[in-house]
Image (cartoon, rainbow, N blue to C red; front, top):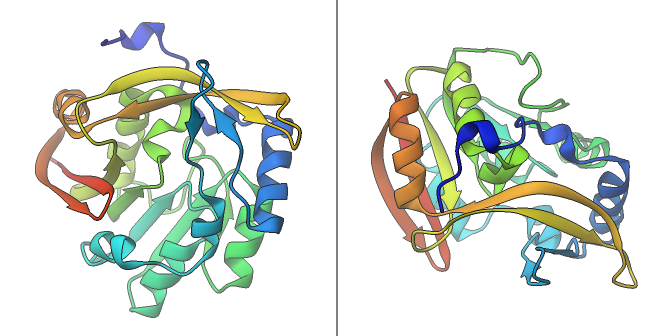
Length: 225
């Protein structure tokens, strides 16, 4: 069900408080999934082990579309930034997790511990921006996040977004679980498919350029005008 922008939380990836960041750090150090569920108890996929590995064939379909300076928003351990730099594409990752940024840097990726809503290098000059691995959910407010991304992109630049299959657009509280299943923290998040994402993006200054799928993952390309 559509929700008015005014009813949504102020988008900010710093909604990941200390308890959530601690659990994320633990998952990164062990290469294990971050245990997260929604309010109904359904498990959410935060596949930290995959993020720690090198880019895979699905990732390559995104990377091939990055032909100029690229900003990876919520870069995690930096696998996509590293892959872009190897192929000679200038790239920078930003993430609020000190542990994730540390891993990215040790692995040769350029990364800053910073929120996407902080002042960032190259504002208004990035050719591409990435919101993959569910990062369209950052802050639980897609319109505000997309507005911020538009400010970061150069005119004619594009954002590549990983989306849900189908036409879902769901806002919820993601609950982070400890080793014994106890709730240790939470943050606002969304799930959104290509159709509702496009409907949100067009009034914000984007045009849909393409949609594609690779195996079980789904993506949307939106160009800033």
